[in-house]
Image 1 (cartoon, rainbow, N blue to C red):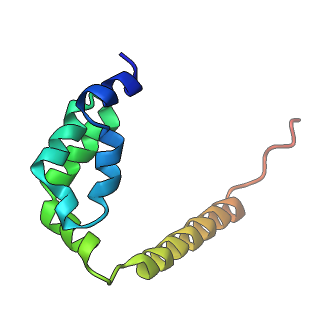
Image 2 (image 1 turned 30 degrees about the vertical axis):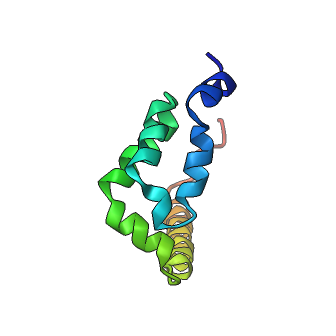
Length: 100
């Protein structure tokens, strides 16, 4: 059965997923059940994750504050740390790649 046929029979699970981001009202158990009923593993996993941490998901959707700036800075710092570790390793290792 194709996705389109399934969507015609039971309502579009992708639409349910998109409206889940529209606010707390979008996270009803019926909409999450539609995601599970879609039979698509990614949507089933999404519904399980939302159910498992629903208070945090609702707060993330409804609040005007987010941690995006902090997450970006943390990612930058981790990248810098990786680069420095790589350079230290290159500097310490003897260069025996001459192929002799």
